[in-house]
Image (cartoon, one colour):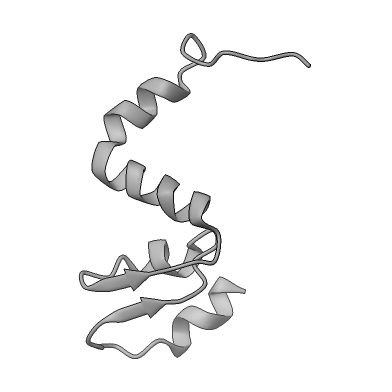
Length: 72
C-alpha cells in the first residue's frame, strides 16, 4: 500500500501531520523535517518518544541480557 501512496505525496509541503501513526510506515518513508505525529494509543506514542529521546537506553533495555521474563 505504501508503494501506492508515496507517488501521491506532493514534492514539497510545509508540515507533515500524521493523526494515526500506527507503525509509522509513511512517516518513516518520508522522513519529514517538520512533523507532528499522533495516535490514540498513548503507549505507542510514549514508545516513539523514548526512542527519539533516549535511543541508546532503549537499545540497552531490549538486549537479551536485559530482558526479564515473567512466567505466570
